[in-house]
Image (cartoon, rainbow, N blue to C red):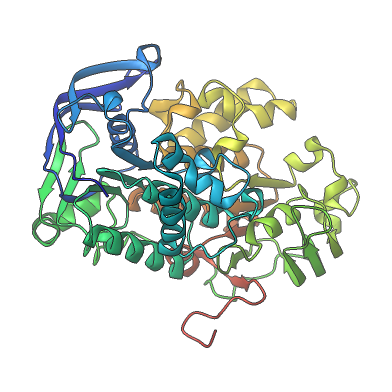
Length: 494
């Protein structure tokens, strides 16, 4: 990588167009060239806004208002492009080309790197992130976690002077988290690059960085210093603000029935899968021989490594992707006159039966404000306006989104987008919720509140199917764990 680039913020702030509150305000921050910084803060504190600004991709003047000064290597971020590498929360937004090798090479080509050097860098970057696939492998067939590794490889191949990572391990399985973190650490060990990483969970990066900076939700810096010093002196305070601090776990809900298999069955299965095969592309199954029941009031978590087919199974159970083989049938209670095959149900029939939260929250946003977004489903069901307003207000309050009710969903932070996507599924009060990585991007406080809400729904009889890599979520809510075939059991033989 090239020599490190310094960062300087003097009274800097940014407000998205159409928003009253500033995403970041009054920020004074200096990062010396070559420093390794873990950027923390509660969900919505402005972490992603700051590093998007540092990368020069925050937007033009018509997209927001800027105050103060922000410099990278002594120049405006817009003039430092090529020296800055950014990995976004959403890997889909950074996968551009049809083949793995071409996608990793794209940034280097734009920088004018010689051809032979490009392909040397491509191979090294793919090895570093543990994505061992042919260069011709189609990017369209990658899982969310694999796309995240691909995007990181593309950033590393550019060898930037300022490396910015926005929750780079959020969609990875536990082994992948360690692999990617260790890969970044190896790269940094032989580089002078400045490094800033956003992560809610301190334990992942605490031994890679030499400084922790915590943004305050109201603007400015809440804490700043060496990791061990900040955690020792401010640990309880940081945990109370939503930072995942080791030794300060978030509160967990008390279920009416104890988890891990002892929850009472409240009736016949809502869904029954027998020898099910699932596929995104017809004729190309990603998993088969899947047999499981989905029961009312029971939380089933789907686990396994990236690429095992977890998200595809979830979409199939949700009636959005046709089964590739085997049988998937809805019980009489869930079907209720709509037929036993969810894939044949109309969208309005799905609304009150199965609510789905996609891995990428933006894939399900339709409206210009949060309030309108939450009203889409209930309005399609022709629910009276007064009841719609009551449901929307309740969900906004429960998920800490009331202050953002009139904001555009696409201007939210990653954690806020995830909570909104969950709220849209809850607005029609379906009998079954299918959630793909429901706790992605949450600070410890919003995580606890989201888990408590799901626990209440389970106790009321709602069924839950969740794809997750979050061990805390599994421990707090899971009644059953369905590991994808071929996935090694944690702590056991592979």
